Amino acid sequence: MNSKTRTIDELMGYEPQMTDEDIRKLYKEITEEFAAKPYDEVIDHCRDITKKYFSCFPLLYQIALLFVRYSQTDSIIEEAKELVIRVKEQSDDVSLKQVALNLEAACELILGNPSRVIDLLQDGKKYMTSPSSNEILLSEAYKVIGKTKEAKSKLQGTIFNNLFGLINIMPSYLSICADDINCFEEIYNRMFELIETFKIKESMPFATLPFYEVAAQGYLLNKNLDKCLDMLEAYTDIVTNNSFSQEIDSFFGDILPEKMADRPLDEQSEKQYIIDAVVANPAYSDLTGNKRFIDISKRLKNIC
Image 1 (cartoon, one colour):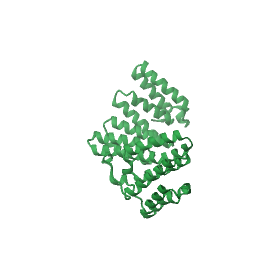
Image 2: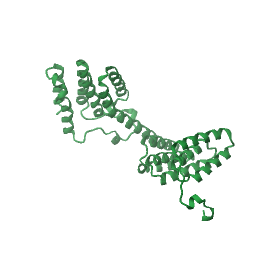
Image 3: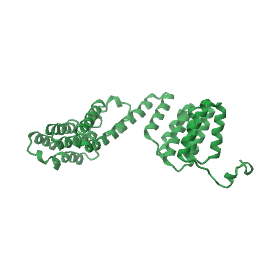
Image 4: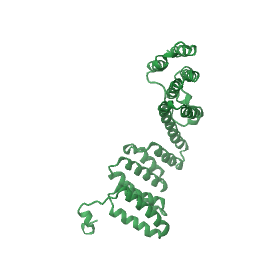
């Protein structure tokens, strides 16, 4: 484009921006236009908007979404892809870069370029992209090119990682709700069902220990000694029965073994930490004379 065809705004370096509220209103208006006006007329309207607001990256992303949503030809998908590439490369907003990359990958998948999707998302870490959404797109791309095992592996890994994240969060939530026994037991029951359903004690044995230890303290706080000791016995069973090893559940059979690693890097210090979390924990000082607690302590000490 030469200087004669540039607008005054471009020559002056002025880059109009829209507020988030205005973008939402415009998005709604354009969706209504697609329902009421000729398709090409609405597409041309969108093109005019992108020319005027060429550096309003949140708006460009929304227009790209509209192009994908209402596309009738591959050429419109290509236009959407060009818009999100501009957003990805020029925006300073990391989260916007993230969704732009994902939409670019979606466009490539629609255009029949699964290998390009894989290349994009494997290189997507520099944009801090969402792991779950990336893995879904990668899986679809691998499926299209006939690599079923790789497609399964991507989704299994995502399920596994999300399970691991949930297991890490739940002890904190359980602890916060210890003052409400009904809520506490609801959380415990749901988590217990999750652990059993996905065989988490086999696949991620050590990840479950904080859950049982926090559950024990919660029941102790609510003066339910038997349930407290049940939790500590479950904790001890996990430690003594798995021999600091793991079994890969067949549900996750396509994940690479190294991605399932749950073995402590320093086994001896990890064992001592696990013992002290119960035996040396002042929360259980009133249980030192209890026979079941004595047996639990002996079993834990024996792992060293």
